[in-house]
Amino acid sequence: MSFVSMPRQDLLLAIDSLAQEKQIDRDIVVASLEAAIAKIAKHKYGEEFNIVAEIDRKNGAIHVKRLFEVIESPESKGDDYDANTMLTVAQAKKYASDPKVGDFVEDQLPEPEFGRMAFQTARQIMTARVRDAEKGRQYEEFKDNIGDIVSGVVKRIEFGNVFVDINGKAEGYIKSTELIPGERLAVGDRVRALIMDVARSNTGPQIFLTRTHPMFMEKLFVQEVPEIYEGIIKIKSVARAPGSHAKIAVETQDPSIDAVGMTVGIKGTRIQPVINECHGEKIDVILYSEDPAVFIVNAMQPAKVAKIIVDEDTRSAAVVVNEDQQSLAIGRRGQNVRLASQLTGWNIDVMNETEEQERRAKEVKEKTDLFIRGLDVDEMLAHLLITEGFRTIEEIAFVDVSELESIEGFNAELAAELQDRAKKYLTKQEQDYKDEGHKLGMSDDLLNFDFIKRPVIMQLGNAGIKSLDDLADLSTDELVEILGEDTMSARLAGRVIMKARELAYGITQGDEE
Image (tube, rainbow, N blue to C red):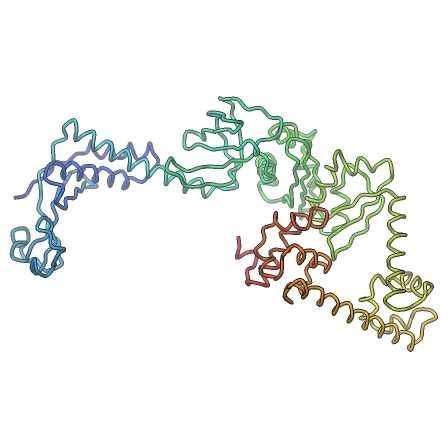
């Protein structure tokens, strides 16, 4: 017997309205309603049957069916045979003209009546399905927006942690540590924050927000400065002490544009909204330069630098300032120089001219002692080598011998003898270094890792890091904790670990991202 459902355009209108309201796919709403109707039909006709419901997407007609699998015989299914969901070919001919084994035949059922209990059941099923779909949509939407700024209203505050209603779509969460120090938010306040991470949960997506991350400030500038938004001016790096002080480095390839002036705006009109949003944080806008020395000098603003000495091998710089500029260069509790280091990625040491002279004298003495001991020469010859610009025994060992011969008072015999002594010294140093490392149980792959200095490698060995794999498995925080912030900054530690992973596992930075 066949049952025909009447067209229901009002049902389709209700489905479209719900889909639009919840911003989910129309088919999801239809599937949810079909599942609800099938549940009601099973309650009426029997849970043991395989019953499905279908809604015609064009006219809203509802079709309820009982499905049977066509089998060869009950014996062919063995213990899996179920008379409520299976029919033999002969039995299936009641519902289809030419059934074959493996087919499914349909028994059309009358549409169940929606009584009070049935309606409640349908509503519960639909609500659950639609809510799940809405959670999934919210997760996908916000997952794709990690790193973007969102605006919302403070919904509640618990133990200093702030819960934010994001335009009625989802709830964001700002930990107390991700709030700008000193700011006080209240329920009902409108607040902007950066989406830091999104995670799934049973109650919907968990959206973790931050107002302290450097990228939050970067994105604020993108919103406030059209030239940054359009890519005419690029933000190269940002360093923050949230709520207190920040530095931002900008550059442009257009020589007619003042990148710093454009970012600040006339009388600070562009930077002021960012300062206000960051709770009065003082912001230095710095001009970026490919030349590390120039970039570091710029980053030290507002202090004026008299001289700078950079060491590219260790990415460290000695900044020399007049005595009246030293406190400004260092900043309160070292904040200015620390932010400059974070901005540039270089370890920066600030000193006045007297301290710099003392440092140079100390360096000269150390080099003199090294040359006297390592090359077995007198003090005068050691000073002569230093005056000619030689800093290490390695330079003497591997420089073109003609450069040594060109030194006044040197000849070919003396130059060759110095190089021979330098190479013998380095060979002995290498063997002593390997012997010490092997005594600590360190492998050669770590001992030969030339991305960091050997005293630092020995420090790792003493801390239980025995191989390149051990180093590659560390996090940035763990490496900084082992070596100390004075030895290695977080940024340099990250670069060291990435290099170790590249050599140990063939993982490049792009792969890891």
